[in-house]
Amino acid sequence: VKVISDVSSVPELRDALRGLVGSRVTDIGRAAGMVELGFEKDGKVHRLHVQCAFRVVREGMILVGTTDMSFPQDRQMDPGVAYESRTTRFDGNARMLTDRFQAGAFQVTGTELDGSGSFVIELSHDLRFEAMPVCSGPFEAWRLFVKGDTATHHVYPESSLYDGYPNYANHDWPEPE
Amino acid sequence: VKAVQMSQVLGSLVGSRVTGVGRTAHLMEIGFDQDGTRYSLTAYCPLRVVREDRILLGAADMNHPEDREMDVEEAYEAGATMYDRNARRLTDIFTRSVVVVSSAEVDAAGAVGIEATGSFRIELMPTSARARLETWRLHSLPDA
Image (cartoon, rainbow over all chains, first blue to last red; front, side, top):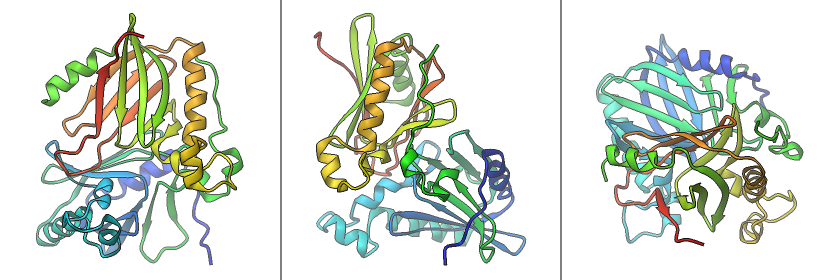
């Protein structure tokens, strides 16, 4: 059964992200090509699924990002095999980060969302989660929800919730002034 | 090259005209013209062109064929993806209208934001921890 999610406008998405402030980051991982992030606050588990460009940054260094799924940890290994066996550089770095998240308190201190779906989640210890949607069509870039609450999912973009393919980026292409 | 120097290099785009968007296989390209000197910004990393709040083109558009019934690989090879269609539309706009870079910035982790007149914004975001992986490059082109 396909759960019909809430259609979220950008202000609603901004509020939903802001709701993560004060939560503790629990894990980073992936399901196929989708990044999964976990947060915990007041006994509730928040999940953030990211299917667009994503990276974890600390003081100007990228610690892990979506492109790392294409590279095997073991250079001799085939990238496809590494992807299937969860031994890409993404998997290795994500496991290291998750270990750190489990060992110490990494808290969300702030969130930002621009008008076209890019978000920044600022964490203690100078860590940042950054995402940027890079598809003009009706495909899900990211989704935030509370585990167990199937009625309220916050999804970007709205158009991903219906079949918008016939109108794929057929929105305004006006001439600049 | 340090971030400060990167900013200076990108800053040389300010005042230039955006001339077009394209790709060679997976390498995305944006063209600029600064008083006859042509620059090309090429990106392997995620890229998008935004106008106001609309994403007009993005790297992931390469995964979607213009003709829904067409095979994805075939569309990619034939230059018939949504990326290609959107790039053609944008290039048409940049050919007909003068769109000029008003600011260009890069953050410490290599993310680029280029603002242009007409509310256009070009954004790039490197997404790999690998230090020696090329994500983007700005270079001048020889005279036509």
